[in-house]
Amino acid sequence: MEIINKRARFDYFVEEELEAGIELTGTEIKSIRDGKCNIKDSYGIIRNGEVFLINMYVAQYKEGNIFNHEETRSRKLLLHKKEIKKINDQITLNGLTLVPLKGYFKDNKFKILLGICRGKKNYDKRETIKMRDINREVKKNLKNY
Image (tube, rainbow, N blue to C red):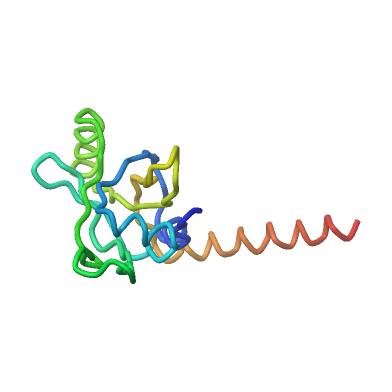
């Protein structure tokens, strides 16, 4: 099961991609396995040498009773110090943003694919829409032949 942030590639140019683990509680992983989560409005920040994912929505697990979690809490991402330092340098020096692109399971662990991104302007977004329409038209014409 994958959770894809389709809006990220439309709003940002992805400069680099990183895979990170995420620190979750027991009921959060059960809710994610049920597909009740969303990374559309989330972003990453660096606090005290640690990377956190802010505003990731994970619905409460319905059988979780008192052990349920807060739905949009800050979640710690698991990265090496060298990777965190590299990300921090790029974010502070180049004015880039840390955006989650995809969430997926790998070897029974939930991973987040982070993108170090540069924001798009409106004319860049129009260019993206135009290229997508051209590609769709080409595929349509190839099917007809």
